[in-house]
Amino acid sequence: MNEHEHEQKERFKDISFINNISSMAVIGVSERRKFFFLRNHQEHFQGELYAIHPKIKSIPNFDDGTQEKIFRTVKDVPGKVDFAFIAVPPTKIIEVIDDCVEKGVKLVSIFTAEFSDAGTEEGRKLEKKLLEHAQNKLRILGPNGMGLYYPKLGIAWRPKFPHTSGRIGFIAQSGGICNIAIYASQELGMSYSKVFSFGNGADLDFVDLLHFLINDSETEIILGYIEGLAKGRGVALQEALANNKKPTIMLKGGKSKMGSVAAKTHTGTLTGKKTMWEVIFRQYGVINVDTIEQLLNTARLIHSYGLFNISNIAILSVSGGYGVVLVDLLAHYGLNIFPFNTEIQKQLDQQFFTLGTSSNNPLDVSAQIYNSESIYNIIDIALSDKNIDGLIMDLPTWYFNMDYHLTKDPNFEPTILKAFSLGHKHNKPLVPIIQRVNCPEDRIRLLRELNERKVPVFGDPFEFVPLLPKISAQYIKMKSR
Image 1 (cartoon, rainbow, N blue to C red):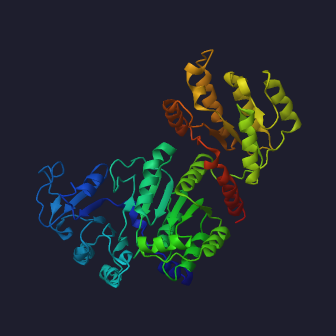
Image 2 (image 1 turned 90 degrees about the vertical axis):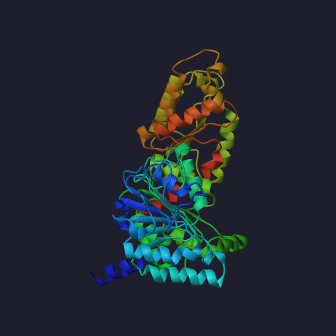
Image 3 (image 1 turned 30 degrees about the vertical axis):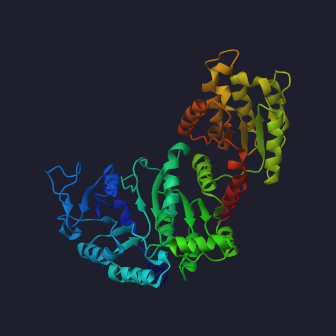
């Protein structure tokens, strides 16, 4: 091992074993909480699962009598234990950590709070003692965190988390933000490789987990929510980002003065100056967003179309007025409504046959929307223009409800859905806006169908238009490396 490799190894804690977890224990199972954390992992965990409590002898629908699964301490488990979820009072935590080290547990997640997050000297001392007893033999997520969600292996801290694995990794100090992101994933048509809620980050911190996801073969897109870093970890963060070739989107908490105070109360973390974070994100091509919704919507666009560079956009609208509003909004964010080239314009002219329509960009199809085959052709032709980087269109929900159609065309919906998928044919983002105006059942049905086709649907252009230049900037940064 050369000097650089040794320094890197020291700078980033090794957790590559996570992909091979085959056994776990829930330490501190609680009858009062109706065995909440045990039940959640019991739903889908693929390996051996044990319950640890000094007094509980039986748990309904867990131990069937054919195999012992409940033990007084983790040391009493006859087989190996790779991972442990710990939910015991702070007064018991050191004893449990000693047991885990003796047992050879590789990773623990500590749900227990009241360490540095409490803002007291006593809490800080307990957190320091926690690390001393781990002896650098045991990797720790937390304390004051939810730990690891790994759908491929069925590791999940809450009930009914999706068990379908995907290619998106997520790191967050906040367990609540993780919960939102995970539960929202099905509606957004996304799935996660791994999600880390690391709380105070006493041992494994944001940088360690980012370095892991950058090198994780199961992860292609990285999301992060970060409040701050421990002193001295900035250089390691920059080194991790310098070696990163994956699309990365970050939400920084505690950017304002009041937010910084809230972050210190939340996880006891130093947030750093807003400008410092902005410079780092810009330097290393990280997409910097302002809300959890933007974080997820940016991931959704990249998950559907990969990183893309978008500057010149075609608009297709059923309302001339709505098209004008979109032009103004796109112009505000530095995006162009570019004229079609001469040959493409001639082909488009031939597709328009209804009064009150316009074949120029923005395309105004008006009542011709009911002729679904012509709409398919118009979108196909528009996206074939080499000067056009993508297409945005609006189509309110009632067009997908036959009760609103004068002539019932059974081919309308399947043809329009095929048209929505043309972005993949041309390798250009196509983003439909289906406004939340009425027919909610139809909208839900469409969302599910389009999720299957990897077509991201939005109800409001503000949900995605401000994100397009950010994605383009990261595309350009990545290409320049």
